[in-house]
Image (cartoon, rainbow, N blue to C red; front, side):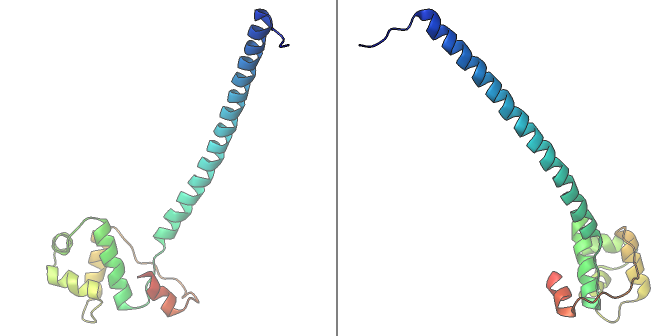
Length: 137
């Protein structure tokens, strides 16, 4: 024979189940909130490291320096002609600079850096192999 449960027992059980489910959902939300805070803290660190890493670009050859200038120009959404106009130089001069041609004058390089809001930093040479540096470009 099957047992018949009185209505008040069923409703009490459902009330308890509802209370338990609500508490469990609150617990899950709390865990998700803590995980979200934890992740955001780490994301901030990762963004900071990426920003610092992107700031330290280096070159050992005229071609690598030209590639850095080209990358900065493109990030600034400038054409060679627009960069030349900001510097008071011709588009062909910018092309020569970005190609790493030996005929580029130091003044042209410094004008390009200023127009791109960049600066030249001199530091001791790292022990990285030149082939590893070329792979960055």
